[in-house]
Image (cartoon, rainbow, N blue to C red; front, side, top):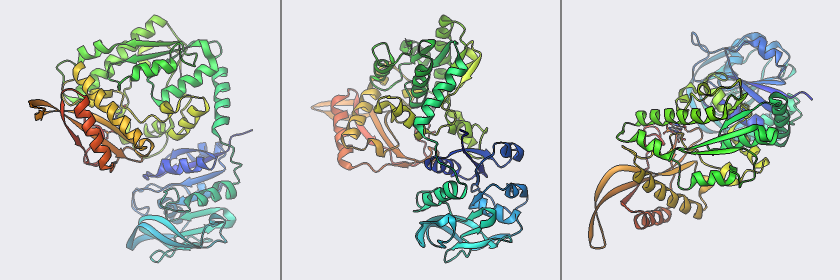
Length: 514
Ligand code: XMP
């Protein structure tokens, strides 16, 4: 059975990946391509529908992102969202102009329920608006099917040609019935069956891997993070004994994390991974001695990681395949997929492939979003605490210790962080905060403990909520939780006499401290 595909054409809007995720929530597979992508290639993919995303510019400006008229003449249903709706209008002969009033935020929209797009949607519904420009004249054949107080054409359709234009953003959760609208488009208008499911994915991925690997040898760098864990387990289910997983413990992991990873994936765990743990803690501490500049620390950790892995790979000898836990946002952000967010790729440690003698890379999660990777992880029986692990940077605690890294400081931050995590879990807040951790500031100050004067470190606590990790808000933790964490850290962790809570948002701060 052929896989159904919806193509999302990216005009650089900030919600591009969100559109794709929402479509997949309707159990329809979809991929993102830049508006510059060759239309013939898109045609060859035989998509069941096309969605045009929002974008940051004005479509009538010189050099603005656009698309060819042919896109609307292929007999494939097209849905334009915000900028996408305006481009559709302009390309098909309508008019888009700067509006007298900028609409921004939650807005009441009156919709015409006779439109297939708004089936089962309330006739007055709250939608998320964000636009300067508006459709001042619809293209010929279109009729308005939604409006607001300030915007006469909040949505338009040319039903016979299956062309739909929406000024607001159905992909954003603030649009209360947005998922219904997207469902109506992909399932009813495009006629997708909706058979994209994670249980089907696992079976399909395993047989694809078996076909590709045959009797070959496979090597995987396992970090214990969600993506590499899921990729490794998928490989082990597919080719068992042909796989070797190398786990480098760089001594900058969270408290007990190395042992926890070993307990799950090592010889006493449930998986057949040929797990090799390399205890390289001392090596990393020696390389980091005397270094305090953040970027230099990152570089040293990244390079040393590659050296350790390389040595291990040499012991194993040539392999046929190297597994990477690349996921779909990495693909989109590296510029291969969509248009926006090329900004973020600097975070990956990178460089691994060159140091290993292999023929081909396998990326079994390349088409999945993070939440889908988690579903696959659960499907494969990986423990929940690993599947729902919060993001942890490759350089680990190395960038959560301001200034020079030493074994003693690693221990301090590990102990403080463990207490923080325990208390967050005890308060039931684990899943409602996107990322939280303790960092060791380089500041020492005077305090008193009993009758003694102390001169010890300050621990900083961070907790943020974010959608995409590009911007973030500090989480408003309950005061009692902060108090409990603070008193436990002061009492239980030596050399700490102060705890601070960081309420800076990003920007201007970053999530990590270095
Ligand atoms: P910042 O600190 O840039 O962090 O606001 C955004 C997200 O990226 C993670 N991060 C890193 N991840 N290597 C990584 O693998 C790094 O060097 C690195 N620096 C930051 C950070 O944990 C957050 O999720």
